[in-house]
Length: 354
Image 1 (cartoon, helix red, strand yellow):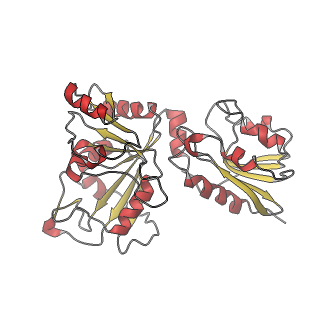
Image 2 (cartoon, rainbow, N blue to C red):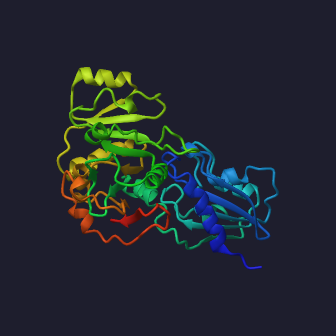
Image 3 (cartoon, rainbow, N blue to C red):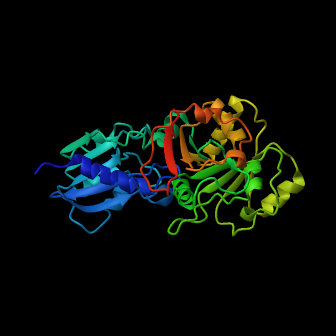
C-alpha cells in the first residue's frame, strides 16, 4: 500500500504547532512513527527545547524496526546538551526517514544523509507549511528574531473606542490569547500598559496564565507602580528596556523581580535593530508586538514586522472612535488572507508583510 506522505507530514506539523513559542532557542519539531500505514508513536520537542521530538517519539518500549519516520525538521547529528537524534534513529532500526526542512544549524545542515547510512531511505519532502520555521531560520541565519504584530480595528479603521475598553468582541479576544501562546515573548510599551492596565498573558484554560514573558519598552521609566501586572505572583519573566538611570525607580522594579536592561538610544532603524538583537540575546526568537500605533508605526516604517494579525470588528465607531496616530499603513495593506474561524461577526486576517 502506497504511503500517504502528506497525511503523516501534516500530522507531524500539527504536533509541532502545539509547542510553538515554548521550546526556548530550539525549534518546535513534530515527529510521527508509522508502521503498516498506522501511527504507532509520536513526539514533539519538549518545553524549553529538550528532549527533541525524535527522542520523545522513539524512547518507548515499542518495536520500531522497519518503521517509517516523518519529522518536520532534519534530525540533528551533533552532540549538544543531549546526544544527536540520529543515534536513537539508528538504534531503533528505523527503515525510512522523511523530513520537510533542512536544519540551518551548521552542525547538522544536510548531514543526516551521511550519518544515517543504515537507513534505507532518508528523503526531504515538500510541505504546505512553507513558513513554519521562519522564526528559526531568522534566528539561525540572520541572528535576528521573528517580529509579528497584533492589532484590533473597528470597521471604520479606529483603534481606540472612547466609550469602551475593547474594540473587538469576547471571542476575538480569546483567539488573541491563543495567538500569544505561540510566541515566547510579548513586546509592548509603558504608554500602552499604563493606559490599559493590561496583563498581556494567556488567560485560557489549559494554557499557562503566566506566559509568554513580557518585555516593556519604557524609555524614561514611566511605568506606573500600581499596575496589575506588577502585583501578580511573579511566575513569568518581565524585562524593561530603558534609557533612564532613575535609581529609585530601578530599585522599586528590581524588588518586583523585574530585569532592567539599559539601552543607549532608540531613535532610528539601527537603534531598533540593536534593541531586537538584545532581545534575541536573552533567548527570545519569536516576538509578538502589542502596542499602540506610535510604536507600531515606527516598526512598520523600519520594515521590521514580518506578519500582522488584524482583528476587525463588524461595528462602526463613528464619533466614538479615534486614533492617536495615522493608520495609513494598515489602509495600504492588501488585507486578503482571512482566517476561517467563527468570531461572531468579527474577522481575523493574517497579513504577510515580508
